[in-house]
Image 1 (spheres, rainbow, N blue to C red):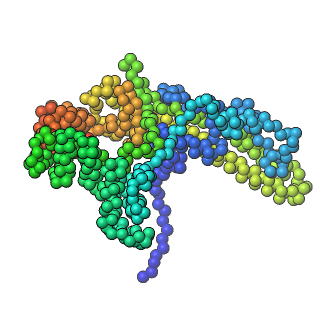
Image 2: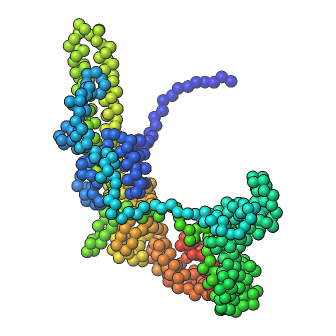
Image 3: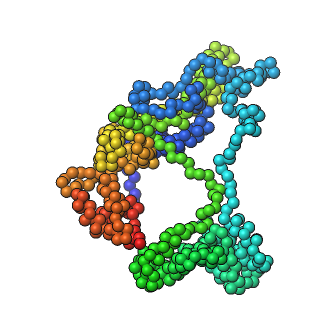
Length: 545
């Protein structure tokens, strides 16, 4: 069968995003903290972009300020241009040869002080009388502490080796991840140490007696039992009262014989099996609640610095009944195009024109100098193209920063206007149902743009700091036909659970009935869904004595 080759013309309409549009979409998604890092990266990558003379930009920017006019993208003052002018010599090396007479140290010292200040002792060394605190301190982990404690126990060399192996197999929570038989095999193959499982068990019990209490457990049950046993041993050693010892013994029995019932909070079955009254069981439960399920992480100093403080992307204030929205612009530097690069581009243009005139005005010697002039012109053109690309990139980046600010403020202002009554007082009952589609239609933008802007953004109000996405919710219709936000429904559900009798918590069926009494008509699966979203466990797990 022969193949027929055909040619035809077709007309298609396609929409493609330019690299600048893709970069703008990415900038929309980043938070205020991430934007600061992104600007620093751009300043390092593009030499034509620099911080303006004004230093940092305004701390906050309002939508009215953006409407007044776009930010100034570059500065052309004579002083900065003259200080950073680049002279290019005829030899194509980038400038004339520098002589000692032309060299002035002040030309280098006076500019970009932050770049060289670290070399000066007065700037790099602190005052001895000044109090200093290192913000990040590296501290000892629990495994190092256990090895130190192990070294103080009266153990034989073999037992110390076994203890080292046991401590080395503890995870970050303090649980033993390897079985006794596996550790016996490991020591035989890696350390050429032949031991019996009983020897390992003996040393393991000694390790379980070290601090923090509960270390060395193979599961949660054993971890809690170790802590109770250690408490019981200390109580007997210090001759504690009979009531305290009785509570510890009851707690140990609960963990040993009724752990499954304890996890499921089946307190009636526990009391029946252990033949204890309700008061004794309650005291035992309270004691178990004080135990640590992750002993490896408690009481030990972490080497990691504290979590950073949440920085809001928007500020909203109520000034005499008027809501004022500001964009957090605190750490964004004022950007501009480097004047020296603009001057450089002009000089390259002048050089190109002079080269063309020189060739045209020397026709008789054109053949002898043509090659040198062509090489110089090509080098000048390449250098000019490089400078132009960097300048264009800097201007595009500054324009995208401006568009990001404008878009974020427009979308957030639409959210504030839509939820005006809620933001005035912070009353959850005044939160209206709101979808991405509603805001997109108000600002005349695509839904995906609205989604990018609100993603992981926070707003600080006079009644708290919230994730912007929390204000978006679907609507639920009440019995009287009124449409309310699902946030109100969840708030009412949370209040019901908080006010319930913990001895007999409300099941999902009862929650449906109670919500119906308040006018919320919900299915049982809907109540279960909202309960899960609020992080509320099922009724049996909320039961308390």
